[in-house]
Image (cartoon, rainbow, N blue to C red):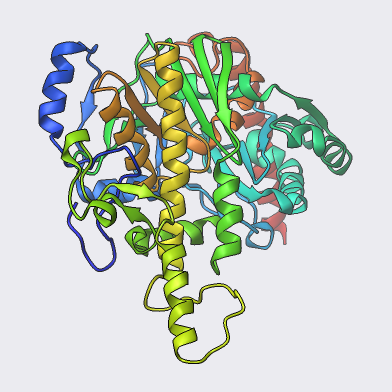
Length: 484
């Protein structure tokens, strides 16, 4: 990776050589030693990478197979079911999942309430179901400390059920998962006056991930700086695998079959750690601001590198001079030097914090800490995959958010130390595994699977009845308008 003003050279954390070191040689050796079952891969352009990471797009599902449609065909804020601007108090995701052949009435929403973020999924019909049948899943996020905003959002969805889904407001049910499903159960139930079903968090994660792996093309991808963003096609044989779900903390699940899993490990150093420490160390107020700062920063201003110790590479054990030897390892020396300079000028030193200046800035701190947390997660994930003999490692959760440095750090560490035998996969709807899993648990058997709409008779009857009622209402409204 070449250095530039806005994006300093990528520094791989301690014990992880540079991504540019012998990639092709390692790949060839890995293919010879560890034959891998081929998965279809799709090349992408740089422009498309930028678009798909920041704007995942829409997914269209039918009985013959799923495909992604134009990323710009998102749900309008005041059209196909989104709340009005006055109730939209959080970031609105545009990665809708299109369901053009789904005819049954949907009368529920799903919410995954974590320690830091709330992820919400709901269904809405298209504007004109006569010419554009079916509907779509829409995704929304809230910070957990704004739970009241989320409840108000759900209340708006409840009141608009007939327009959104064809069901009555009183029919609405909420599928809730995550720790907040218990913590805020009474608040949600009392505010909405609807049934709230609490679903197991880990089981929902697996159901959601299985759905994305097997059903949604251009959803799962691999990533590296030298070979960015290759999509891998849906496949049927997916087990076993390791799911690394990175939220406020980190859980690692060994999955051996549908709803068959075991939590094999994790770490308390996750997204909440990064968010908390950076809120103390920098001026950033949101997680996205922190990631933006990290993108502009240069961790070499605060990290101690192998070159700072040896003055060169440590080739005998495969460490380049740019390898991180100690995260934040330079800061203590910088502080001592600043204090010595102050004393030499006759200034009093009282142990105050080292001021920002020519030495480093908030972006440098953010990038260093992002690498430290990401590398810790990657190392633990790799060790768990080795212990349990798992080749495929899926990273989910709202920590990653399509952030390139994070994905590259996680992916390269696993690729290098496993000699290509293990693979790191990422998802475009990475933060919504639990919410989608909870949503799917409400569905009839095989809902959302290929062929599951072949026998949609009851749902079709409901839709036709709803269309008749809608036509009557529109005709009555038209007559009234003419008389006026």
